[in-house]
Length: 118
Length: 115
Image (cartoon, rainbow over all chains, first blue to last red; front, side):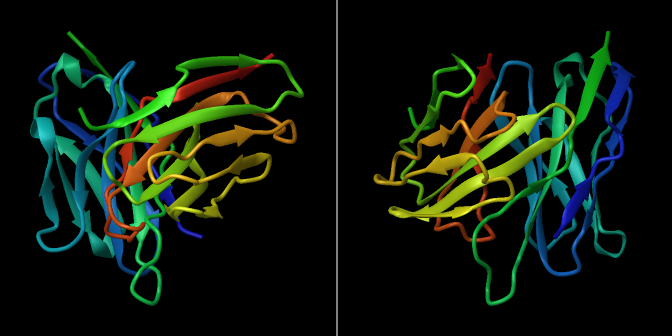
């Protein structure tokens, strides 16, 4: 079974610092990749996704992620974080199973809690 | 206003009681999902349904049951057989019949506490 690793469990940054959150997955085939964000007291919402094409994906609120197939990675980046980015961030993978794909079965990482200080 | 609603937001039950969590969507999505979120463990898939009257077990289905009688609704029952039911439960849906290229959209969640 596939797995997703998020190595940073808790990250504390000052406002304006740059952010990079790691995400690695273990699956050798074609995958779709997602980053979701859960702001305090709010729904889990989609930040960005990669299906195919340009491996550098831009999402909402200035976030971007780069898919590096050779490293099985999909790291999330933001050049300058804001206090409002304080949230929990989840990486998720949806592999394309054989036969043209079946259900959208996401495997999530354990999440990274980001705390941005003023 | 389209979206996914889950009720109630907080739910308390005594040990040994079954409890049903509600999930409704008005997005006209075909597929629906139930996840469980525990601190430090991310989200784990309990059950999913690609179409009405059909559903499949996810990774941690033991102690749970679901039904999908209507496209809009996918209730989850936490039975007394679930050994550790206290958790945050999230419902999600996606537009096509669970194709791997789908994007899942999430509801606000129900926090269940079993006393």
